[in-house]
Image 1 (tube, rainbow, N blue to C red):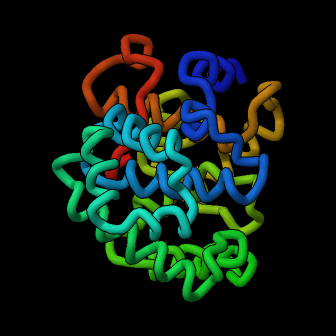
Image 2 (cartoon, rainbow, N blue to C red; image 1 turned 180 degrees about the vertical axis):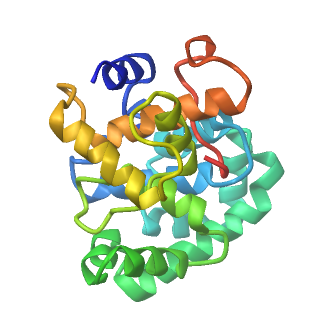
Length: 231
């Protein structure tokens, strides 16, 4: 469908790609994206979250071991350097709690957490149980990028993507998120856009949804917009 090609051409694919994270490259890249998703999960601009992630990435601080080795004070310094000052104390504490739980319960492996999960609901529950502050929005940001990579990463379509899909005529308005995702998948399977997959399309729809939410037409919105907690 032409609308799918147009929205992908305008907004590109996965948000992780903007951070130079290849989620198919191996477990470490999923850990990198998990850190990024936690940062995007706060009520902070996408630009600041991305900048903060790059501060961590430049120092190779993204694994549970590396994050825990920094300690609270050093994490605050890194967060402040990225512009995360409003949430620095809270986020440093959250990162330490989450990575401690991940280490204690899953040997520091997100892949193990996924493999032990029975289905999507169990996967979501295990991620949220890693620590306070890992809520539904953060989990959705994390897992929708892993659609088609992790077998149990099958979150329902986000409200932003669903709203944009309705406005673009990709499926009928008023569907449940699960039904909207199924309809979108059928459209995609019938006419995929070369070089992309369904998760890329969802990411592009999220960007378009953010544009409409902010009262701007998609074509007037900067190409590099990343989701915050309300994405």
